[in-house]
Length: 126
Image 1 (tube, rainbow, N blue to C red):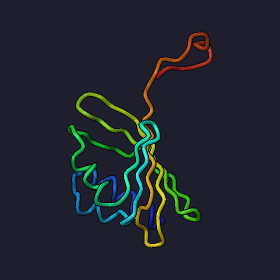
Image 2: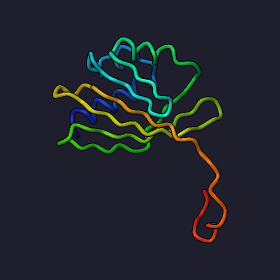
Image 3: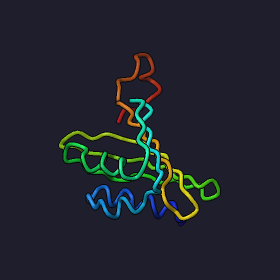
Image 4: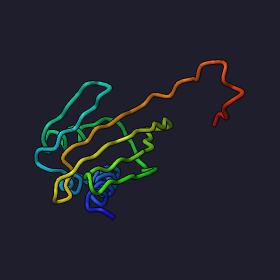
C-alpha cells in the first residue's frame, strides 16, 4: 500500500469519527480543496479543517473503492455518504507530497437522475 493511500484511508476514517486532530495530520499546510460543481476553493489546512468541523448535519462516510497510482502520487476514492435517511455518492481525487500528506483534494458530488426514455430494453435498473 502506498503512503498516500494509507493517508487517504486515515483521512476518511478520521472524518467519519470526527477525529479532527488526526484528520488535520493527514493534510499538508498548503492543501487546496476544490468543489468544481459549486466553484468553491479552500486554501490551507486551517481553513479546510474549519470547513469540515463546521459542516452541518450528522453525516457518515463509507469508502466503497480506492484506486491509487503511486508513481503519480494520486489516489481516487468512491464514497457513500449518508445524512439521516439520504444516501449520496461522491468521488474524491487526492494528490500528495513526498511525505504522504494530502496536498490537493477535488470532490465531485453527482446528483442522481432518471435516465431518458427509449433504452429500457438495453439496461437493468438497480
